[in-house]
Length: 243
Ligand SMILES: [Zn+2]
Image 1 (cartoon, rainbow, N blue to C red):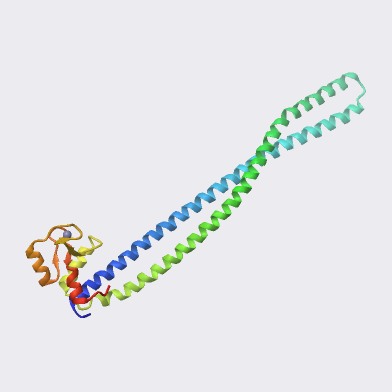
Image 2 (cartoon, protein in one colour):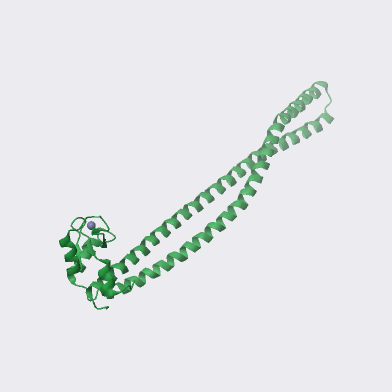
């Protein structure tokens, strides 16, 4: 009974509902991809922050080590001079200078130890986080690839739907199509069934006259939500259970 306009119309409606579901699944998948992208960006940002922190502590350590080295060299120079002095005054002044250098070195030492410990801790933390990070990245990339495959499948389905859509309108009265297309711009389910004498979308109760009209005209418009209404039993009688 493919030529019955009522059946063709119900078929078109079901076809569009499937397309609508596919489009909304596609939107969900695209949202998932956006979420995965932002998770990836957060991961990259966090690991980069740890790396920068590590580099900055390394610089602090290098700086103190350089100061220590310079003080060391200065001390050696002074000690060498000490061997060649020939008066008491010069000797004692050099001794004092050496003492001051030693004090400066002592002052720097605890600072250096703190920085070394900090560097050690940060290096271990970074190494551990890096392993964790690489696992997470791999996991995210797998998820993205899976979602992208699903997106590709749905994109293909939609192309297929769109190419079939025009043939589905053949044989349907212009009046139904016009009403349907107008409603379609307002709601996602412009055609619904009637159950227990009510519109299944807005639950508006139908009169006995409405019910009689339904059986006669096959479609009527809901007086409350303006959707097109039909009886499931009419579909079964006329078109069989095709979908
Ligand atoms: Zn309604």
